[in-house]
Image (tube, rainbow, N blue to C red; front, top):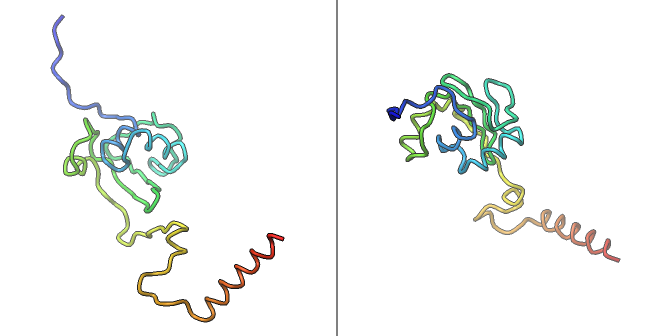
Length: 137
């Protein structure tokens, strides 16, 4: 039996593998979870299965934890290489002014250097504490 020479990567590739190879998501299992949760769209339609196929020219919309990405697939991936290699797999079409999402914890934190709370903010905090304490009885 004669061995076949290694061929070029297939023209289509599984979505979870491509996201992993392009370094847009840290692992294939996280990519699968994001796809199943409906955070990935291919050409405007939500992908629900990680086995969905992507090809060159497809537009992907990703809703990640802290930002939204819009990318165009340029090439299928063959391995998870360094960033410079992964960057060749897609073209980033994300708008220039990305909306940075803050977690509830980050929203509750005061900015460093913002100083002490004002009298009004202190009264609101005290009111919340007293409402909470009254509910324990």
